[in-house]
Length: 85
Image (cartoon, rainbow, N blue to C red; front, side, top):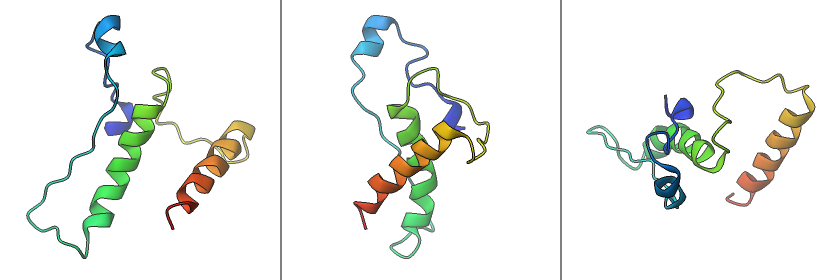
């Protein structure tokens, strides 16, 4: 899955230092303006999380929201997402 993929895993340290970004592409024959957001958002969100998270953060384990760090991460994400509304 996108969430467990490490984009720099096959690169040397020097090559990995040159990576400055990434992209989440979408292609589909049955995609138009009525359903593009639903098609793009899940994979783009996972790709974004994978690209900006530290290399060792690649777990797909669902974290209980009662855990302290998870609550802080979710609150921060909600604040950032609200800026786009």
